[in-house]
Length: 567
Image 1 (cartoon, rainbow, N blue to C red):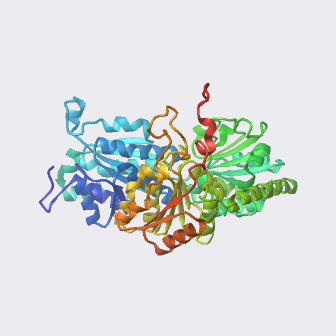
Image 2 (spheres, rainbow, N blue to C red; image 1 turned 60 degrees about the horizontal axis):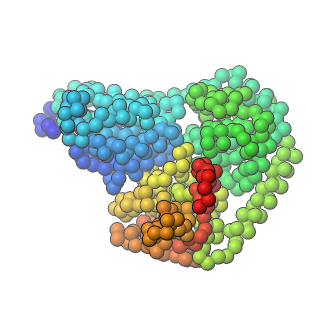
Image 3 (cartoon, rainbow, N blue to C red; image 1 turned 120 degrees about the vertical axis):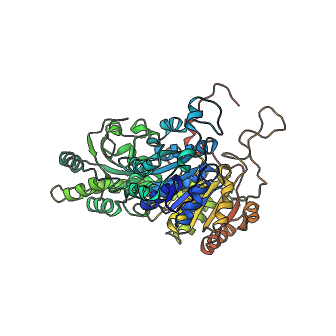
């Protein structure tokens, strides 16, 4: 690769770095190698922080969650072919979840690739990326680098955010041009995500529908959290008194202990609400598509949505409000001056009664003593620690570990709970933890199932290398879902869902200089988590729980295909 040596010349790598810096990019997450190693070095040289990972998927997940937290595109840098493909999973996940992210990948010689002549890591990366990304571009000329980056930034952040692929060839990175001419091409993207103002008619219709509702409900999705319209959403809810139900990553948009939070009465409010306001939430599989036994068959929907194609995707939306959430909420709040909306006290009382019943049922689970621990008495400890450290970030993945943590542990601030999201994928844990720690500078607590931890566990070396304030709790029950399944064929191999119950995950972090704990009682767990968070040191806690505790696929067992035979 030719690199500019003359002070009057520059090359594609330097131009890319300067374009990133010009647009306020302060961090790159990636794995270096041919042909992008020097690009990472030059980024460090000009003050852009480079965070090096052990696997591109985790780097991509860190970039994606950084984008979610900041509303600026997170940047993931990868090598070509296999490295690109590793990052592509995270890019696709970012797109599905609406996280702004740009994956910049080096690629090989176009002429050889197009004739399929067998180049080093030959792969037509841009065309492969297209189905999985919001947009995909290739930059071929150094004078187009700033324009290419600008297109990627706009695509990633405007409308519904998503993942964008940016292909940079080896020839581009090494191409040499006049430095002054290169500087003329650089610019800062202005207003990359312009406001989208909904129509006044849609606001009036929505307010009228709510004013006549007997049992209204506001359902908050992670799009509402991403919008950072926190104060407007709070004002609207508290002025109307309408109960709200937060989806998983919307927990904490208002505190989970807020009197209007209906999370503890989820089934009741979905089955009985007559008007539901969807704020940054989609009627996808996570909400049973708005259909079936979990929903009032006569429910009427109001939907705040940036993408008009999402409207009517599963159920008819009687009052669509198409626009950005902040603008939409501002108009709804202003509309309360002329349209009086107050939740019916009898609806609130009905919800409170159901909440009390379910909270008491949960209390019995949390306070039942077992040895070994189960999910619930272990999570009681996690809840107590989070209640006394409300400003931390909580990363969560697994099956039972995910579902039970979501139901037990309260969140108090917006965008503090980060989890598997729309796809329900495993493997986001360490990437999200690193991205949250780097972006926020605050402590992160990761609650991981033992199976889920295995997808990205090697990134604990990254956590230790950068001395990040991440405390990881691995719920070790020796299995996927649970650890007591048997080999139906009677052989010596473990069952498909069996892992090593004797595994000492804490020893892994010890090898990298982190702080290890192995615990088997609630008291030991509480002490270890508290010390880990307050020390601000990389910490891993191997939390031993009963192999017989857990449900197949957690709360989504019904998604498994039915079998005609008995096992």
